[in-house]
Image (cartoon, rainbow, N blue to C red; front, side, top):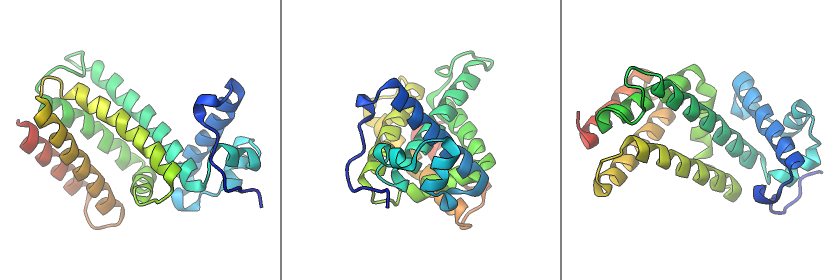
Length: 205
């Protein structure tokens, strides 16, 4: 058995070649999740798809959940970059223009559409939020920090005592909505409606 019970190598200590192999692994996961869903991803298949040895994969990622979390973090980063670039090309020219409620709603509307086009990633996010793997949790914490930075940018000018609970409320509504949608307990339209209503409630029209 290849898997070993040891902490994975820290990204900060990796060489350029190691970072490239790590990227190949996360790219392979993104492809496989898109094609077959997160439930069917296997470490051996990821290694074969990426061309990286299975033993090396386990040196970089402690478990499948850790690898999935790193991959969804990368997918979300690319999505966020695309959404912000798209908003910057809009009529106002800047993601930071307009009232805070409008900025946050425009951003999350685009993110929701991406999840609608790629429901496997919505399922993956919901699945990982229930994972007990500490290294997966660490990767998701990095994603949360990045998302917080984006939300703070969009809520520029909002007092801190309002921005923090607003961010928590909006993110919680989004996560609960994605979970309900991917398990058939809510329609996508209901999720989008709930997210907008919470944004308008906490940030105003």
